Image 1 (cartoon, one colour):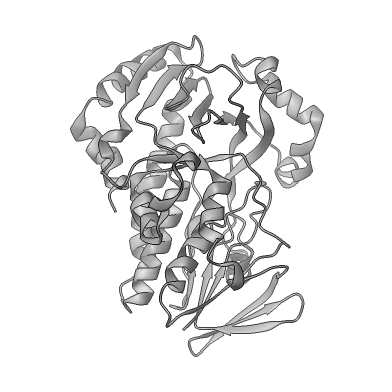
Image 2 (spheres, helix red, strand yellow; image 1 turned 120 degrees about the vertical axis):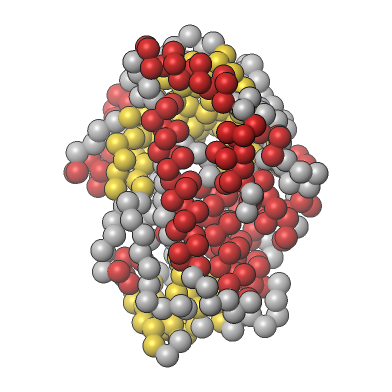
Length: 389
């Protein structure tokens, strides 16, 4: 069988959504009855050091099937807990022991995105074709025909689309029926160097504020930390479409001045600081063809307030592989929708709770948080149902 995995750039986010395409390609390559081809729009896969990624145990279990557990220990971290703080006064609210969901071989993991992508692509160098942009997708009699802008044409048994929230492939097939929506938030991210004095460099620190929250977590044992903030912010329709705006120094300065309790000096010390708008999916799209599938953010993109983007991409890719490998006729799409809806609801609720601004509701939230992080029954339902695949 020929399988085409498409890990193209996601417009506007300044990041590469390649994880799930490369992961499922690794799974297929390990079975010699499959021939895998990966098409990349760009001339190379950019592996700049930097931004972090969180992987909960549900994805680590699956990554270990392609020997992720062999990754050098100096390339990953295993935080034991999430510490909750108030942005207003930096006081600690409570802590959540995420290590309670760990097993001996599957532990909550944080690392640099570049480390994960490099791991995923190391055995796929010969399967990747660069400088290929899709212009047309046709499907008939269980064959998928792909035409590229350079006029090359390929035929495949399966097409697996993993090109991000602004999926060009999905738009070609759906005729732009389902477009992502701006969810009135901006993300600010960067790397805090090890030279900057931070209180806890081993665990995840989550700061809750008025219409704003930020997270700091380790990405390497040498002390580098990932910084990601989410801030409520309205953009006009023109501003949403103008991605050059987020490289404009005056716009960036205006946004950073609105960030509560974080000084100019703090941001001056952050490396690779970037701001981008957060777009999310508002509906699902199902193809009337069992040989074409979406995974990752192309399938559905949710707000980044539950740290499940990468893990759900990996989980969905594995479920699809299992369906194809075992010739299961059950509905991969429907099963994945049920799980994604659960994650999406938690992501939206987390953002709402993290961004409370009324002093009374904030006070009550903190009381509930202190109790809930110690309530095993609640944690098993809220996190356990997501972490256990």
